Image (tube, rainbow over all chains, first blue to last red; front, top):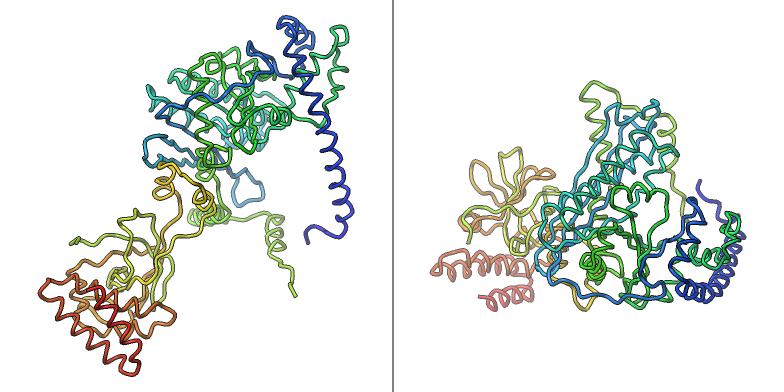
Length: 394
Length: 200
């Protein structure tokens, strides 16, 4: 019958009050965090690196680069002509209650050639996975959704690499609507299976291809919840002899995000200094020459601060770094601080409910055509039946 | 004018009284209000003749957001007009059909089926179809359509499709037929005749 709204009303009031109080606490923390950032910026670089070393491998804060921590970097001039490639993916997850056990990955991509006046080139690729090796892992367990996400992320990067190679020699920027680190996708049941490693290696090879084609590559993360810069400034404020796992956890900035402080610090179009992600996943990327750096960027006059991830070869090449910075801003101009190419790539990738229903009809007809009787589980059928009930309106 | 029919869309909804077609097509390939088109029916044995009376573009929030900006880059305008999945939809009133015996000015025996191809009518066929004017009664009888404007535009386009020396004769003949049909409604008749004269 759905949500019992009357019983939720008191909780809703509590939620509103709690969020209001939290917003007051967070607002009070921001000046302290900014002061702590200035303090961190004054520290000697080697002293800060020594503290980071002492924090150990489990610390997941932001590692500073040579750029001064409390500086902001104004928008560079965008190239006259720039190809911006965007890719995004969606999927139908495997469902044991469905008429057949399969999954589907759909990738949308677009190339907007800024300055050309021409209509962008668009592409959609859909692939169905139904073979036993696609559907079961090494231990013969059905694949998990995270594994499908992993294949989807690799497919997105593959499209970016293929298009970038076709545009080699031209000014090109490739934007992924995700972290470059495959972080979500690698949560495949907490295990790093041989297959997961295989896809990671494929992904790193695709990054090699993007580097060879001299493409500015960026992972775009809207409304980031990351606290890695706050972890750094907390660490910087701890005396060396008090750096322990326990003190590192006791941050005074709990509830605050990096985005909140950079929203105060970054004028429109400016970026933060570069940082390196201390995530353990970044070790594989570093070994392959693609260590992930990031910066925060104010993409909109209304203060829309996003996190932009770039591989080390973009971070260390001023021309590519400026291309990413200026190119993202140019691509965000008409779409409220979110890149136009990603809006369109998402539109091309998404599987609307009607199309999914049409696909499932087609599947059922195909099964019938092969003499198979497509049956959903009783659970799926009863969900459909009860889901059709409408509340009466007076 | 093209001598071979140009495909302008595919049927999405239909009945014997008319059909709705849609397609992603460029601006210069858009069907024109008041023009004749034909859609395949009865497994290719006949064509339903339609008169385009409405052309619309489906609502889209993203396009609305871009439309509200002071300046939209040309690439994004081209993307919106050529790539995005927002088909142009057109509605046509059935005014006749074509089979082995030629054109007939009456409702078709069967409507076209979903996804049937819709073609613009080439001038030669348009002249052939409008050589008889019984279809004017079908336009006048159509409910809730901009009938007067549709009638005047159709006759004007049909005149333009003819050689210059035949145009006046065709319009006079059509004017007489309209006068006969609207003998009881002189105000509407005057409006339509004024519409024809103004655009000659």
